[in-house]
Length: 137
Image (cartoon, rainbow, N blue to C red; front, side):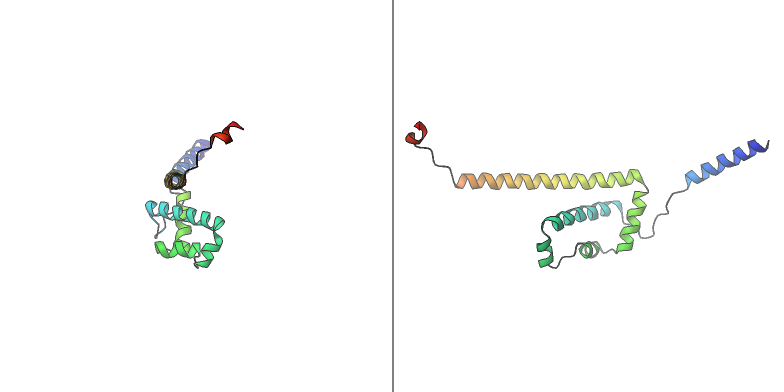
């Protein structure tokens, strides 16, 4: 009987422990849509920092401060919100999928713009046709 009682208590504790959230929701939680915007901007700034650090420095742009000022948040609020969303894998995956979707859309826009620019450049400077003498050699 003691074994059954202990087993019952363990099952009850397990059920209640699973129903409790792993991490409490922070009081100043950044909404999901805003986190998508923040992560998108952070991704763009990281790319800019790795390829154009000098330009960022010339314009006195500090990526972290820029994000905090743009979204009116502080580092603690961002850290707490990030930890909270990471503790919720389904939500976290949705956030990152939306960021990736936006980045891929921006990449496509950039590629299309480059193609258009190259096409215009080629159209404005056509290659002269070869003369018959050059093609016979």
